[in-house]
Image 1 (tube, rainbow, N blue to C red):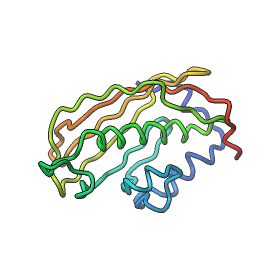
Image 2: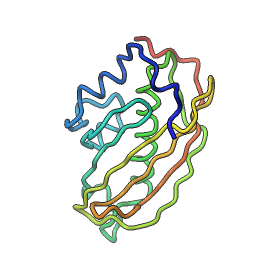
Image 3: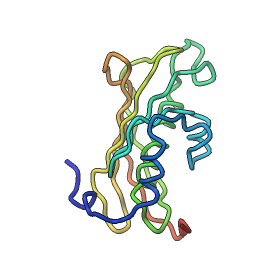
Image 4: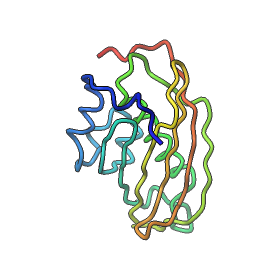
Length: 156
């Protein structure tokens, strides 16, 4: 359930950036260097939630030719960070923990979709969740994270 906080009407250039890039590959557009490497396609950008689709490339795989767990965790972590950034807050947030469950394999060439959601937004800590599913809707991995406000200004 999304907080009422996300339905407030105000200008949010960060969310507007993501909304303007729906349908685009993020390889050249993501504010995150790791997001650019992952090169997913942004499918949706809503207050408190982003959805990105990735193709499992060879350099993302382990020797068994399935999505390596660390890369799946990077997809989830990066998307949760992007989602917090999309809230349009004045300071950057950073992960203080990341809990990931790996539940199903995604082979080389598979398309996987990650969807994030802000569960709770406090003044200093934001709790986020993200789910990674395959083309058949199977849950490949899921993650939760708490992100804490830093002293670094976004500088918009």
